[in-house]
Length: 397
Image (cartoon, rainbow, N blue to C red; front, side, top):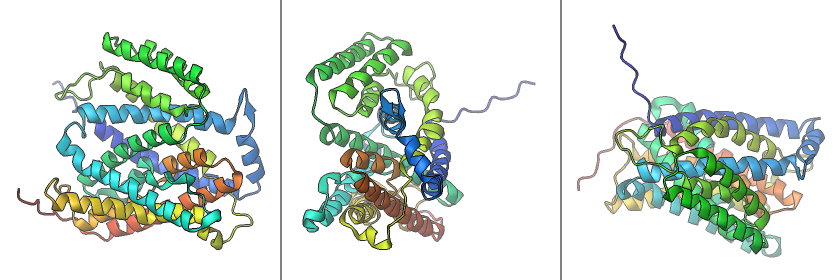
């Protein structure tokens, strides 16, 4: 008797599963970085990160090269979900899209307000630091809570974070670009045009895209635009055939590439980034340092700004009748998930390191990110743990 083949899981379900597991790995890697940085190995930790490997120190290889692959994965996720997934229609985009927008604006305003109020002691350049949600970390916390959180809220959080990532990429490209070399920028533009041409003529092999993508990364790095933007630009050109009946179709180049690099990104690249960047030494610091304008603005933006911005926007959109409460979720659970949006670890650290080159300010921003993300994780988890799982009536139209 021939056994029935198991039904393949959807790409989005695989993405959720890998992100939640990856979030746990990221938490462990970040905790390890803090332990090492505050141990007898602290000086060796710093020295290893600044050791030159060829033209760049190890830390820059991680932040400029490895993270370009992370952003390639982000771009693939965004394109797939926008064209053939959970964000493929406007009704599906309205709630997470509006929530992501509110969750970017309010934290930025809080950060700028705190730092402008501090006068010469403030550092408003990092206004975008608290605007990002770390999808792996947030979904990792949800994974630890088990089935008490409805699947609809996990999907909502993932969709919100994907749109949030798109906003962060735009911010990096527009606001965190140094003096530009227009010759190199022109070469990067030619590479991108070549990638677009490959897509238009229907090339389905990944090899030509990856070769041109590597050149695009190099020229983008040399141009002054942050090199990680090249990852997203490459992702936008990878072909994806719309196939509602078979969204996991591995003949589509985008699905093949995402399937190939996603485990490496989730379980290696992001944890390495967390280990390399979360390690801050607390020597000579006190609790009072958290009240300095930079860490306070970041922590307040993440912990207060995110939940206020996301939840208020969700409430307005649902009460206006433009979207429904996520299926089987209570308002308390919705609020708990909006608090988790304040976990801004990976992208917040990344934008912070682009904002400030001084070591002292980098340590301050790390403290702010850790404090804001930690408080958001603890309060969000506590709210969800105390929430009853009961359906919220869907408003009549």
